[in-house]
Structure formats: structure tokens, C-alpha cells
Length: 283
Image (tube, rainbow, N blue to C red; front, side):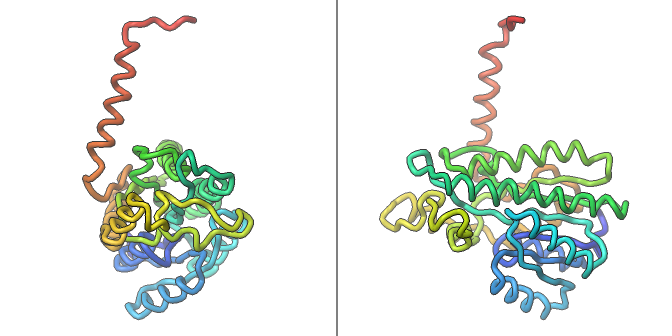
């Protein structure tokens, strides 16, 4: 999508962090943006700030883990802007601890938002993009955690799922003039360590969060919290996503920090093939 001016985008998790950075970058390119977020107060504040820049933006509150709410948000987007060209499935949570801290709530909540929120976004918005025949782009936020795993937290499993879904959709939708990109950011300055603030009551009252960041006595948690607080600027990530949409990038990465870990994973997979290279499978 070389010419973004006048196009319409729907962005989830748009009130803060990466979602807000993407919204800003798109709006600066003349894209009309429907901002979607579960937090109404934060959404209203973001809208007020952006409107002062003459950005053509509007907002709708929705929980992406509930398909009916995304459908209502899509209806509001069509009513406001007439069509949709760009879908950004950005909303996500950092929930679910490693093996010793697994819980049903942690799995249910993390997968409902991080995976099914993307699935529902695709199901609801792709037909709208197809309908006008002008082409479009889908960007889904995974994480560099979708290319590696530091532990067994549901978070990593969910992000691997988003990567796989995006890779498959890129093949499925190419002939329909819809590009698909997966965003795999590193450590970005966001509110992800406070994801529990938006935990819906249907998932319980508490879930373990990634790396137990709320435990100040935990050296790992405290160090990771500090890294997030001094992480990469979300506005920079937004600029990368805008470029990725314009150029139909398959993977959108933010930095080189985790390249050696990802390379080590691929090397291990290659070694696994080498171990069986000269063996003939039984039929």
C-alpha cells in the first residue's frame, strides 16, 4: 500500500504503547484511524491529544477477546469512515507465568486476548477489506517471543501462534490483494507489565504475569521491569509499522538484540534435520 493518504485503519490496543505509536504514524500519513481499546479513560485521553494535531481519528471501546464486541466496533468504523483498508491486531497482554506458576486463568486469558483477539479481528475485518476491492493490509502484533522462548509461559505460546497465523494468512490472502505482516517487537516502553489491570472478571481475580514483574523482591522481575521502563520508544515502532505496511513486509522487527537467540534456535532445528538426514523413514 504505497499511498496511505485517505485510507482507513482499525487499530486495537490503540490508547497507549505500540498501538498509540502506530496510530500516530498512520495519522501523520493521512490515514483515518478508528482507535479501539478496552480502557475508555485512556482511549478518550489519547483521542483528545491526537485531535489537537488535526488527526482524523475516532474511538470505540471493545474487549478483543469477545467477538461480538469487535463486530460492534467494526460496525461503528464503517458507519464513521465508510470502509476499512488496514487492520492492526495489536491488543495483547503479558499474562501467564512459567510452568510452576501455570493456572487455568492464565492460559484462558492470555490465549483469549493474544490469539483469539487476532483470530476474531481477521474474521470480522477481512471481509470488509475484501468488499471494496481496493486492497489492504493486516498487521498483527506478536513479539520477538514468537520467534524464541525464554520459558514456558502462555505468553510465548500465544505469540508463536500469532506468528504462525500471520505466515499462513499471508499465503491465503495474497491473491486477494491483502498483505499480511507480523510485528515482532523487542523490549518496548509500554504498559505490558501492568496487563492485569484489564483482567475481565470472567477470568478470575488474578493471574500470574510474565516474569512476575510485580514482585520487587525478584531480581529477574525487577530487572525486566526496569528494562521495559527504559525500552524502545513506541513511536519509533509505529514508524516501522507504517513502513512495513507501505512495503508489505512479512516480518517487522524493531532491533537486533535477540538475533543471536533466534539464530541459535534455527541452528538447533537445522541440527535436528542433520541427525536424520541419512535415515529412511518406515512406511
